[in-house]
Length: 397
Image (cartoon, rainbow, N blue to C red; front, side, top):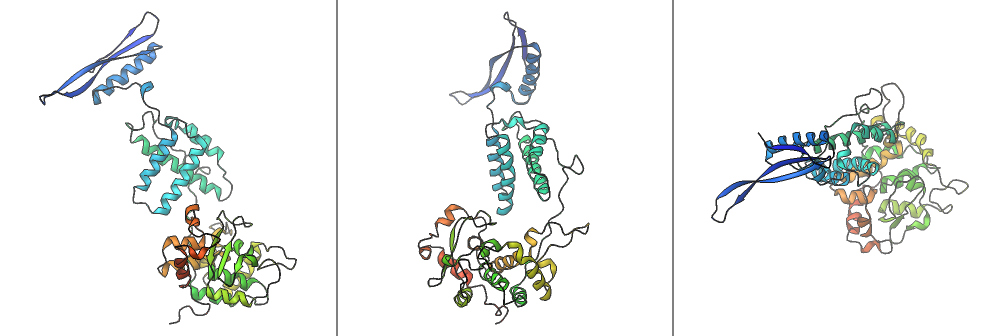
């Protein structure tokens, strides 16, 4: 049996003695095992007995025992970084890795970088769940964030030699019906074709700004908030350059960037008579709200006889309209723009640069605001926009 004994010291503490097996190679090439004596002091007999049992088990399995107090502390930051790297080395798609990275990093911000990885527990998960918003659509995000922590916990527990002290994985999701259950499946929306978008635009009133908004979205793939915040001084019609400013009201956190203007849109813009500072102003000159296009666009999609699944989210099972989010009628034009680029063979990075998806400061730096035409990516963006057909020309040979 593996040797590990305890004895009481004169000072009242308890001493654990054991021997670790080590394999050494002699100069003549022979290999032999030696047993090095080790010892560790514990404040109580109970602590010494626990360590004695751990030592006997460890020596029987591997020949060596490392007391818990002597093991290097693995921080939560180290565990999360290792876990994300394992995802990157897997066969997951890049978008999936980015999503799961975002989910687990939210937990790291909650626990703190220096927290020991061994602090993973059901109680910690419950504290984390209580700190996450759970109203409306955020309930599904909370479930995904909790599930990612549980997956990381199981992954770490399968590697005890690398992450010592990790307790038995526990699950919080699915345990309490109605609180931590899986969200409803995401309804995938088909993107409209260029022909369907053009048919929809013909049903928008030419006398108001609705058709102009749709045309800018169709040629440039902009978010509705970006279109409605566009200013005439952001457009260089002579050079065919558009400046999208960061911080537009209601827009996502995209950096300021320059884009080439589609030739079809350039011809339209030159024919429009400015009515103020904004390209799409209200009568009083103030910006138009994004939800002002919802009903006109919805009516135009219906009149164009485009299937509802391509431009709006179907009713939920309980008959309610639910969250419209990316099913909004204006977003369907943007979705058609991006899908059209990808189907035409435009690379994902260039499509993302045009639409503003997953932009980072380094990528944006390759398109300087002062001289965007000097960018090595500029011609790629011009060529990508060339795959977008003129309105009414889609599908023609």
